[in-house]
Amino acid sequence: MKFFYITIVSILFIAGCSKTPVIYYETPRELTNEQIKTNFIETYSPYLKNITFFLDPGHGGEDRKNKGSQGLAIEADVNLRVGLALRNYLRLAGANVIMSRDKDTTVALKDRSLLANKSGADIFISIHSNAPGQDGDNFTNYTSTYYHATESDYEFEPMEKDLAKYVQRDLAYAMRNSGGLGSFDGTYSDYHIYPKQGFSVLRLTTIPSILIEAGFHTSNWEEPRLALEDFNKIEAWGIFRGLCRYFKAGIPKISFQDQALNDSTQLVTYSISDSTSIDFKSIKVFVDSTETQRFIFNEKQKTITIELPTLVDEEKSIRIIAANKNGNFCFPFYDIVTDKLKR
Ligand SMILES: [Zn+2]
Image (cartoon, rainbow, N blue to C red; front, side, top):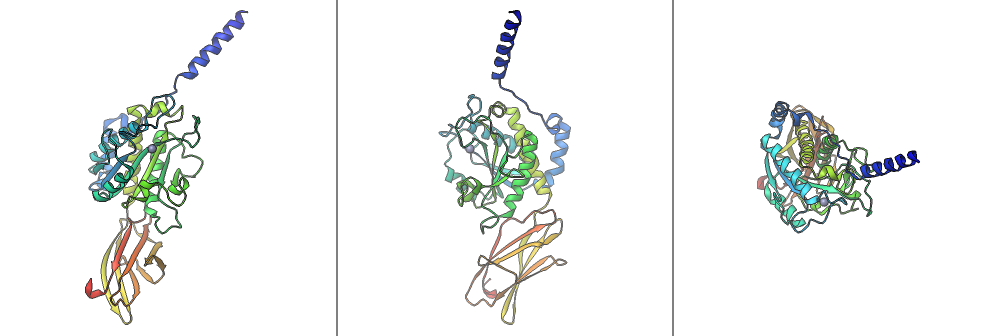
């Protein structure tokens, strides 16, 4: 009988314990030691200086309905805390930061893209936490980062996938999360969620953009962490570290150099440079949205010369894609070529 009571008491104790939320996280070394943090920021500051980021903490104001079942994490607030902490780290590194909201206010989805497009920022980062498709799923949890469209689409920008990869790797590592089972590295096309459309905030934003779904506020395990400001700072540090490494890997820069007549053709030359060399196999040239092989890459002079038919009262749109030897692609590059004299 005594054994029976002990068993009952033990079961009640265990059942009672299982209701207390489990909170587990580790603080990166840079955030526990001010000197290590300062050294890290100083090391990467040269790569981030003068870059302008547009941070978009999702939801807020009238849109506060997304929350965890334990009532601890409200998505709008989690996103804002991560965004503000990320702004702080980026500014310490000398970057400029603009935000779609820096308090609990309503910003329409379309306005987030419009504000970003007008801001003159280099990069748009939308910050969210996630929820599964099925109600009552308190188990699913992973970290994922989205880019727009897929590789076979003309509107796909390979550099957005590069950026997503770097942010995803460091964010998931800082949170100690996996990237989910729908992708090998935790980056996803937004067509994975909305086929052929993607997320409107990525589709309508014309500057390079990614969207982060840091963790699931619906997960019984993740929710209590997301509700802690200290943990949100770790998330922000993970994103920051990813951005540092992305920019350190270099980004090829393309600019117009020269245009010349050559018998019946026009040659248009662009200079292309990077801190590392350009991977010539990565170069793609499009004329009026159609890929062309009629170009020459001069590795020594760091130029790409494109051959066009003679342009008489005509204009051609040029798009160039190229990566450096670290695998980082250039920012979107488009140009309009008209008759030489009119340029
Ligand atoms: Zn969201």
